[in-house]
Length: 116
Image 1: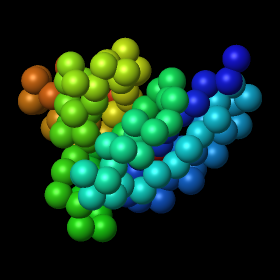
Image 2 (image 1 turned 60 degrees about the vertical axis):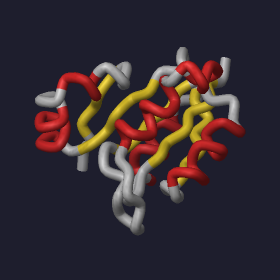
Image 3 (image 1 turned 180 degrees about the vertical axis):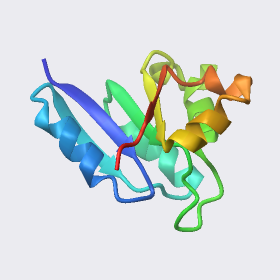
Image 4 (image 1 turned 90 degrees about the horizontal axis):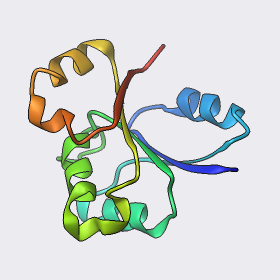
């Protein structure tokens, strides 16, 4: 079975996308973040089995981060995405600081540290 993965990152995420793509089970679609009102339709247009989001999406002038996007996907209005796993990725220090704010942590199914 092939799993469709959406990777959202405002940086150079080719290493992550390449690593995932090496696994024959994953088909990876990479998206740079867009304005919030344009990003949701991009996510909703695909049939994704997994969503991987970088914590900070503010490079390029965006004014939202992963928790805001995850919250929009976890709301009852987004029924088709409530059961899709969302993984948060970032540097170790940013993940550590993120876990201090417990409410947003529950939006993600798993958090992982980006390796260099």
